[in-house]
Amino acid sequence: MSLPSRIAALVEHQRAEWPLLGEGYDALARVETRRVKIARSNLIIQHNPRRIVSTGARVDHASIEARRCFLCAENLPPEEKGIAYGSDMVILCNPFPILDHHLSIVHRNHIPQQIEGNVEVLLGLARDLAPGYFVLYNGPRCGASAPDHLHFQACSRALLPIEDDLRRLAPESNNNTISRDGAAAFTLAETGRSVIVFRGTSSDKIARLIYEALAELSQETEKAEPMVNIICTHSEGEWTVYLFPRARHRPACYFAEGEERFTISPGAIDMAGVIVVPRREDFARIDAERIEHIFSEVSLSEELVGKVIEKVELHRSPTSREGDALKP
Ligand SMILES: [Zn+2]
Image (cartoon, rainbow, N blue to C red; front, side, top):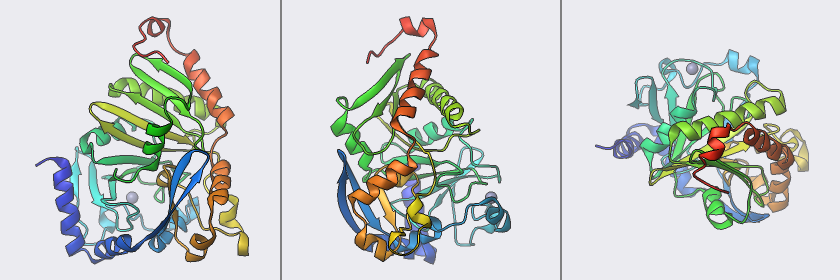
């Protein structure tokens, strides 16, 4: 049986046998949504009350130290079952789904969330779950509610607005294009947030380009791991990776009081175009303008991202310059 078939069977089994997951999917079937447009990007606003667990999570060091890690095997509820992935990861069902077949892919050991050394795992997962899923990574300081335990997530790819944006807007909205050894990177303008898109058919080459961009982002932002959310898909032998460089985790309105308060805490799925809004009062009054403002606050500026791509481009070796397979 293929991995996606085994996962489909796991989700069915867990929905029936694990009450929390059954409730999660019942609630997902009832979520209200609304469509809005910012710049030339189409977004979906989702009212999902159960997500308050994650949106409202305290992720400061002291709070993380004080809680029992919900991804460690010994703390999982007895009903929760998984599928082994490789020798050191386990695929689990996320009991607070935002999208259909929402999975967590969790390392067996309690080791920190970090992208360094793990881009290949992300790419491998996207290939092994293709074509029906996208895989995501939330950085430890911008969306991961377990920053102390390495994990990825995956969801059904049926609803992935940034993918539709790319299809619709590329190539005329591509900026800062670089291509090297059959792997390409470019920024996608007119989406209201900063995103670098990587494409290629070789896992090694695309990983190398991503690591170079991460290293430059790290230098620009003076952070050991730059704040990023990543979405990855794989179709017909080709990977597409959407990297969202972040300037901050939570927008100012998250901490505001009264009318100004919106409990919105963007992670990869929000940056990909599904804005999760747990509180009804926020869902009732949030609009395109507010989301545009939130995106502009939490995204690294397009100018800085352009500079990062330029620096990656400068580092290309003379041999790869000659051996270019893809021209912008
Ligand atoms: Zn843990």
